[in-house]
Length: 465
Image 1 (cartoon, rainbow, N blue to C red):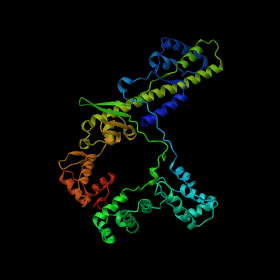
Image 2 (cartoon, rainbow, N blue to C red):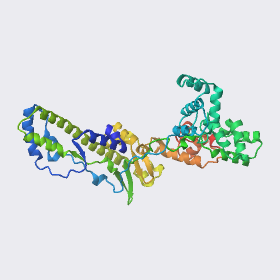
Image 3 (cartoon, rainbow, N blue to C red):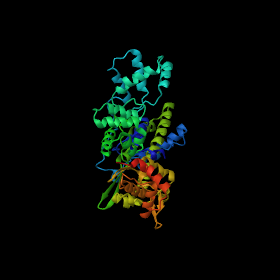
Image 4 (tube, rainbow, N blue to C red):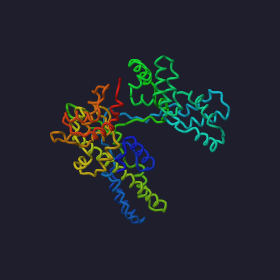
């Protein structure tokens, strides 16, 4: 079950680890002949079992012609387009190291530098300082043996830390972050107006109460639009702009590939999930040497026990890989068959309601097995790379009593919201009425739930000028 759960990259790491730890397991094709395995080792088993007292050793079970695992299923799963890829590593320094490096450009005494460095260390990955000055003063005293006051800490924050790149770093909140960025721009009329709006009317601005802003600042709609345009150019998370903030670049390697050939779906399992493994030839020679030896020493008996253990482990591992591959293929083939109409068109309205239980019953496996495949595997489709779990959705009844996918309903909800008049966005009640007119009997609270799942804000926050 653990092997099934591993996505391609983690599986490769597990495979590499097993090969390194088990000398009886080797990767690649086995080219040499093994004509006399069964005869040699059945004879060995009779003699060896009696002489060392290990009745459970049955070497021919592992090393006969039929059971030497040469695992190769390329004909069904290998694609000529598959390439060997390594996990890429980004160069550069981390976000916090970049800030510390910039402190050297300021003229600071030892105490000021230590305070500035401590402030930088307190900044989160988004670039914000979310701690009260008094807490920082206390921590400096307890952890750094630096006794200072709030005024000095604030001065270093404003005059040093908030002057670092990227602009906006070290802010206490979003409002301060945006104002810092505007103050570093050319002071045009609309930049100055944007600063005034954020400084004096941040709450009405966030809530998009544009009429209040028009009245308070005595400006036209056009002037307000241009000021808002200046704010929209800013970065609300300055820390995320530093390259190297994350040391490892996230890379998705699809476990499956779906192609359309002559109107039919073709499912391919990534060939990196189908390694060629076999028992080491060297272990065969070691066992044969023991068989030919007349005198059985204790060290030789210990060696046989060691070899037996490694053979058991190698056989188990190869069987586990084979079972993993079979389970992945059976499960994904069933999913593809059930969602054939959607996968041929890419139209989410064609996505059929499907839950884990539906697939589990078809393949006669436990729901937990299907869950492990769905939650951790990616599939490359003609419409982009998707998590397998995205092919699953619950069902609801339409006005004709037919089962429809909740994904279909969300897709239609998104389309309705995108087409609305942004000057007068639709409330959840109105959205519920519109969907009922389209044949989907959805309550207002369900509309709100789906809207939140789609990361779409309430009507008031969707309002535009």
